[in-house]
Length: 308
Image 1: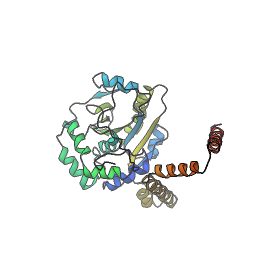
Image 2: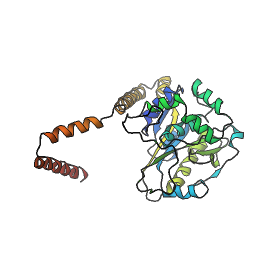
Image 3: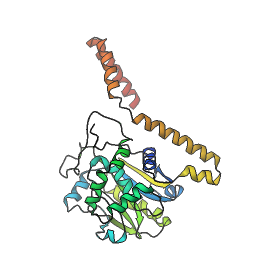
Image 4: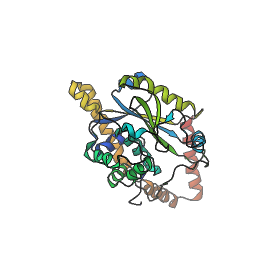
């Protein structure tokens, strides 16, 4: 594994929460959003931003070939006049962290810590491509990002955008974009697009919660039968919130959730490929070809029963 590379990390609320904590962002938490509606969002408020994960597909390539036009909304080429942070994605595997930073560095209500504050100050005035390159070359951001990935003997890093003419059925590429309320509008921050994408007007937290479901559902509707979507919200530290209001039941629930996050994150740090290979070799070395085929057939039958 190249030390200068970016590894893939999971789209997971615990991973993102611990990732931004290691970047010294204060009092921020990520939560899965299982239903895209205002009531579900309001239950998690305050909402600092929404991250949408989807499979990059034919419709995305179609718009990319059409002058990289947005699927909905309109480009805001004057975004820097309004102190909006936006960085292009220059490394494929960095898109998750890129989406997180594009949201957090536009949040006046979040203390992003000294490191990220200094980073934002340094890239102020950079065009989106240069800002993206600066993220990709940040040793701090890359090392924190990689600390939440599974080590691998294979390097899977593509520094370019998804090819607009590749076979979308087989590429398996997933992409993260962020949505945030800034400058009186809902903005879509997609690192593969040329500029921030301005959607409907939005002047308050309540209005964002009411309007963002429609923005997301309009995006989803363009993918027809595709069902592989995931949505995360960035909110406040719920453990701290429940401690402050004295809700002991929810405090215990949040502590248990964090314990589970940490156990799962620790498991992700191990590569079990060599273990699986060793087990298979041990089994096959002690079995004849006939025994091996019988074992495989039993495994197939068990898999079929699970799917019934």
